Amino acid sequence: MESIKQSNQKLWLGFDLSTQQLKSIAINEELIIVYEAFVHFDNDLPEFRTNGGIYSDAKAHTATAPVLMWIKAIDLILDRLRLNGLIDFGQVIGISGCGQQHGSVYWKHGSERILMNLDPTRFLHEQLNQCFTIKDSPIWIDSSTSVECKELEKSIGSAHRLAQLTGSRAYERFTGNQISKIIKHRYDAYSQTERISLVSSFLASLFIGRYAPIDLSDGSGMNLLDINRKQWSLDCIRAVSLNQENDLMKKLGHEVVPTTQLIGTISDYFVQRYGFDPDCYITAFTGDNSASLAGMCLGSNDIAVSLGTSDTIFFTLSSPKPSIEGHILCNPIDHNLYMGMIVSKNGSRTRRRIRDDCADSNWSKFNELLDSVPRGNFGNIGFYFDFQEISPTIIGDFRFNYYGNEVLNFAPEIEIRACVEGQFLRLKIHTENLGFKTDKSTRILATGGASTNPSIIKVLADVFNATVFTDSMPNSGALGSALLAKYSQEKSIKSFDEMVEKLRATFKIAAKPSLDANDIYSALAVKYRQLEDRLTRPI
Ligand code: ADP
Ligand code: XUL
Image 1: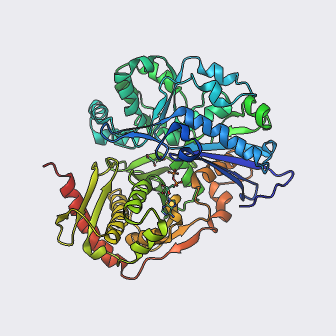
Image 2 (image 1 turned 180 degrees about the vertical axis):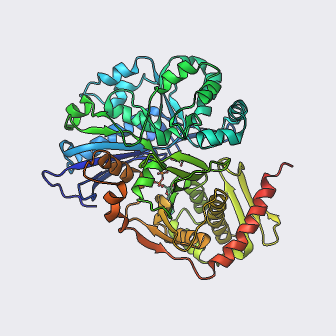
């Protein structure tokens, strides 16, 4: 990162409102990152008392985050960018952003008027604190809507038909099912709602000073969008709204826009308060994984592995085959393409819990112990699910020895390796189930907090038997958003690929698979599948 202030430079800003923090980066015309800032929710906004940015109730399977915390984070990050004096907001040509997928924000009637008339001398959070009918937004970790999922699948015909239509079978965290639960259990709040935003379109709304449309790529994570016709599916909207489809359609905003669409210029609030140019344009905001697809400059044979709060795998697809496992989303860059995605809820947070339990809360010690056990972990396999996993739908810890017998404990070093190997074996198996085959040319591009950890990355290379590349800048969501902001207005560039060609070369080899990796992990994958089947089999 270069932090030298230059006069006359053009900048593009990207934001990422993720689970644990808000991140922002600025790139210049050469796509060099010239500034970045973070607001970590637990540490920087302790008054909200979140744990990892969320409130969760394991018994009720709910997970939420306070909307006002997200708004305070915007106030804070812009002040940090301004007070540091390194960035001249007047140089910003365009802005885009992304957010954790699936989460929903419920704006009270009259809020758009408030958004349009914000007083630049006051903080956003002071002026917007009465704007939400639901103060704690349901987020992607929530898995409390199993009943609504069954109802939606039944109403559309089957899980498979819903997947054909929307790209995914019904998932608890998908916004349509969350909205359905709110209609049933909090109808008062729902009826006072003027607009429902995704986390991404909520953030965009703050920047344009009115309600922002949902984009096609993040919209694909709602079980409400017809991904073939690229418009809302009336059948799904009717099903989740209990036949009040016109009302819900209005609340969602009728229009769903391509991800690279310009949705307006920056609100006067930011012009007056921070000195943005009134012509600074805003490109539609999207989901964090869609923005990461752009930020990682993914080639057609590549797989991106994001090791953030969730572990997520995604790749570009030209002929999608929606199935009841994994997800198909509209592609954020090229609207003729799609993207495939597999998500595991128990990613970094679970590794951190195992680190705290087994390695004195220290990543170096965690790595030392991980490296001290040979590949394959002597045949021991572990499943660690702090949150109910998406697939398989299991919660809790399960440990099996070489003979496949369940045991209560592992030694710390075995526990650590079992956790990391198990997480990556699950991703590998589920990626294969979606029809993706890794071959010799496959590159794994790793990003997210844990991608900076060499021992974890080595296990990733071994389990997938492919070379892992990382970027020196692991915030691919915010970077992708800044790139999409630039691309959306770039008239002289033929393709996104052409624009980011230089960046692609900056990815560095982080780990190569060992010669024996294929043999070891092919055998272990067979065992893992059998144990997973055993755990999910009804008793
Ligand atoms: P998100 O975008 O989902 O908020 P990040 O991509 O920023 O998440 O990653 C944050 C996670 O990365 C944290 O849960 C943290 O435990 C993990 N992390 C940070 N440093 C390391 C490390 N050296 N080794 C493994 N995991 C790490
Ligand atoms: C994707 C998903 C997560 C969140 C994390 O389906 O649920 O990856 O987007 O921010």
